[in-house]
Length: 500
Image 1: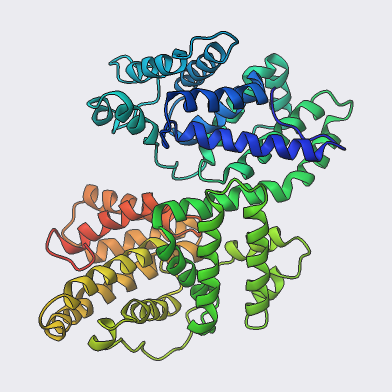
Image 2: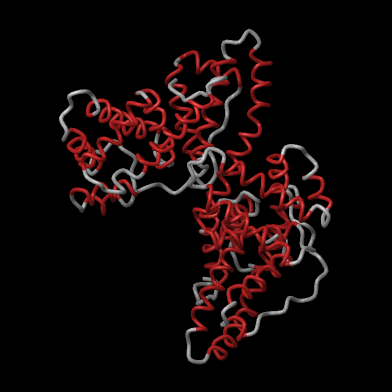
């Protein structure tokens, strides 16, 4: 199958191959991103192609492009992979014309711009194709699809896996690499490579085993930590890609505040900053163990800081497997809302001072711990709005007047919206689905007495869709940001809104 499988007693060589493979993937993903001349581009590709061999080059090209074009079809990715591999095979052969690679890559960019292009579609293609030469190649190389809102890969039964494997091992491997890499496109490359490699090794071993059931059970147990790492790192890096470092830090701070609302801001902020630093260091890293090492170190810090404060953290942290401990913490539901006095708002002077962002973050932290059911997407919207408001008011000649007018609107618009959103997600998480839907229908009928049955049903489905997608810990950030904006449009009734 052409995968880089480390063999016992050959770890050093396997590690070297893995580093080379990752370097290749990054190079392919950023084709010509650092332009040092046509000869450099050709020599770099050919060096990697010759070192890895055609099959490993092909395997890694499937992973790289499935990741990059995560909404492309299997057939579209297949077309692109065949072109890239053929280009390398032809132009890296002994005696190939020195201009072969540049000519072939130019032809590839022209094909990408054709009306009948067989490659993955992208909204930015037309803009790139209006350019010429290197600029066009650079532009096309920079295009990538947004991540899938939720991983779509569903592992078949052991029997189904073996049936597909026996029918056509190569087709089986290609399709798996495409489906898995596109589903977990935000997981770091080293994690994705290790996960796909061990999965295909498991299938090829167990499907020829005289005891396949026992074999699969053993192999799945051995892969459990890696499977959790893939799932968790994909979530972490999806959020980092959508939010950026500062917003990820706030998002994690709010998450911890909702799980352990008795912990003070000063205890949780360093943990949130550590999580953001982990994301920044490891999501795009080619270091083989960056994500696993840093995530385990972070989990140990969380367990040390919070186990004594909350029995649920203590329970999660008792296991010997830190990856399972981390997953347990992420899956932990919010704590019940504590009895706390009303959060004190920062003063106008504090908000416009040098630590204005910190004061705003502290206030949002206080809101999060008082509303433990508020979903991440709404808290993220509050974070964005607070920065926008500080930018507006602190740049005026009279910041105090600006803030005073904003505070009145916040009181009228923001807090009722937060209460409704908190109640919606609280009921979704606490009630059986049918009971949740029944109560929601009743409350909507009371709130909208003039709405027709069809309008009520539409509103009901809209709220149910929001709750079932965005009230969960693993809620997709980009999709839920869009849903929050849609909900705010309904709440504001097309008038100016602070959060709109």
